Length: 266
Ligand SMILES: [Zn+2]
Image (tube, rainbow, N blue to C red; front, top):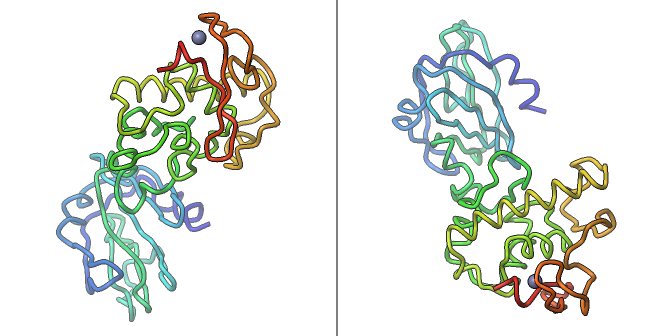
């Protein structure tokens, strides 16, 4: 709601300077970094991730605002005096000011390189849309850092990617030639890239063939009803692999059936 109402009013405007009147929010506000990343830059657009509002600016930086329990972000006119609990002011060359107010101080205000958004500690536990622009082998690899466990379970973890259901996970791993039990700590950069491509390919094909909308695949519930066509491994245990003629196997991982080819997937 905030994003939708704010974006048309702020897009294209330039940030002249940033003032931090009080830095004591949930995490200390760093005025120096805010100014370095935002000053003189035009706002390219607004985005939302979970409860974070993201304002992307020129030069590859993003301003992140979390409203906490009582925060407000409003665009006010030049003559508007500083209010009680107004902790940060983003002054625009238009004469307006983006005002951050937060009586209870549970909010967050910081800026970072846009490219770091997915791996930043505030965001890395939030799943990525597999068909969105930020999904990649690098993201899969970065989020697997320090983790263990089979790649199939990892792929279905909603904190990693949103909407890679059980069927898609099996099919994508077959397409990428990766064994479903392979530990995420033992996957090369090249394999992560292949896997990211395979996930996109599998979901894309499912959409094409099923003629359904993207939304059906991103509800995060791992629904198994949609994708009935052209399955290479799923539901085919005991049958021949279409690539190598080995016999497809079925195992159970985290309570879900996984199908794979023991010869194609290592
Ligand atoms: Zn095979």
